[in-house]
Amino acid sequence: MVKLPKYVQKALRDGLELHRAGLSGDGLVPKTVSDAESGVQGGAWPDEKIKRAAAWFARHKNDRMMMKNPDSWDKPPSYSPAYVAWLLWGDDGNGKGEEFMKKRSMELKLKEGKMRIMHAMLKDLLDVIGMMDSVDMDTLKNILMATHDRYASIAGDGEPESDADYVDVEDAVEEPTVYQRSNLPPAAFFPASFFAGADGNYDDEGEFRVSKSKLPHHINDVEDPYGNESVDIPRLRNALARFNQVDWSDFPDGTMEKTRVHLERHADGILASRAKECATCREEDLNALSEDIRDFRAGRFSDIIGRLNG
Image (cartoon, one colour):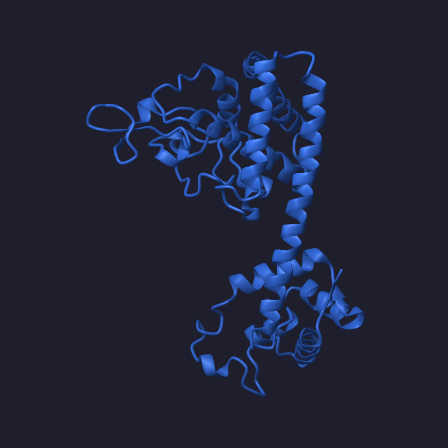
């Protein structure tokens, strides 16, 4: 639970008073009212409500300016329904409540992110211990190096620090269409996108070559290659299965390890999101991806191929 400051509680009380006076309009959700009442009575809101409030304010930031007469937004006695809604979410229009929700939401997400990292690290450690007798030293070394690089990147070494890697399950693409797989941009292959110079060799400033790019795993509307919302799940599984078949000699040094870490992050993020957000997802889908990433780290690529072809 997050304790609400007095100015947020006052905004909630004022919003409830105006709601009872019939000024909240027809679009108000009953739960918004009940949550405001609990905030006044208990002086605190659950963590999830704080995060929802921060998201609500972000979506409704321009409500006032979109009115025909913005000056009437909080003008008594006929307060606008939009203003009443802001009060019921904890802000009286001066931005203090909105800023409080934003700050606390970021703190909560950071704490949750750290717990996810800790959970994933413990799971990886158990997986490595379990496979030590079944792999050679070179394979074990690669697994440990990739695991180190992955957690270094999660901690902020070169990749985004946002919590967006753990998106809701419905944002990932389980059954992409033919159109979604057509005309793929460089971000769909990242970091194994190939750019060719005039001599045909790799050049960061060269022309993008689909034919020489490797392991596509996003659909064609990808904007952020680090995010999971555009991940093509079947192709992600295929990328994990075919990783050891790629000839990396034409790519810059380090591309193979960057790609390994990148694919692992996608798989881990989707699995973490599903475990938290989607209890009704098909168990076989979760199990398949979970087994894929375990076999990927152990170098058992043929086992992934077997599941894909089974």
